[in-house]
Amino acid sequence: DAGITQSPRHKVTETGTPVTLRCHQTENHRYMYWYRQDPGHGLRLIHYSYGVKDTDKGEVSDGYSVSRSKTEDFLLTLESATSSQTSVYFCAITASGRPDTQYFGPGTRLTVL
Amino acid sequence: SQQGEEDPQALSIQEGENATMNCSYKTSINNLQWYRQNSGRGLVHLILIRSNEREKHSGRLRVTLDTSKKSSSLLITASRAADTASYFCATDEGGSEKLVFGKGTKLTVNP
Image (cartoon, rainbow over all chains, first blue to last red; front, side, top):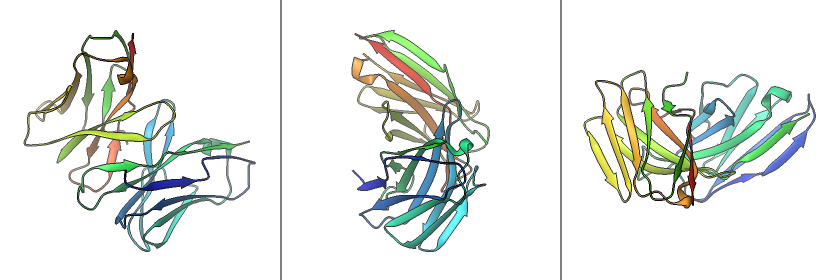
């Protein structure tokens, strides 16, 4: 257990509203990732972070921003949610002792109406 | 871009049978990993095989890697109903800290 929590676990919002998802880890790992999972697409990387205030884009970053002001928290923000952003969002970390393996949080199911 | 592609997309077998799923990828890799996802849950790491390895075992799991064909297979022996899940392969793109996941194989093991 890599001590990863995500909040909220479920959210329903309306088109055009801002949404922030939080990923929290308790074990001081350097790398953190945000993915979205959609039927027919598998997992796709949105953004990732390799340290405090160090982030980079993934495959599907348009419409998303991230922030990491402290090691334990990685925030994903949808500035103006759209229906195409309805998805299940997973946070993951790379454990310091096992740099190749990712450990996943329980996911956040987001519905944009 | 989708690096790994699993085959088949869905597989249904009886308890006790073996399950084989395949993964193909496009670019050079340092390692390939397999993950399992139970319905409604996050992914769980199963096994990692490095590019200089050809076969690896972990319990009832056997993974092979053929870098010349850019493909890998995951074999689950003596399957159980609890193995029902989706299985994903993931590759690092030329040693990147990012993983690229395939779309997954949905395995159903019938009791």
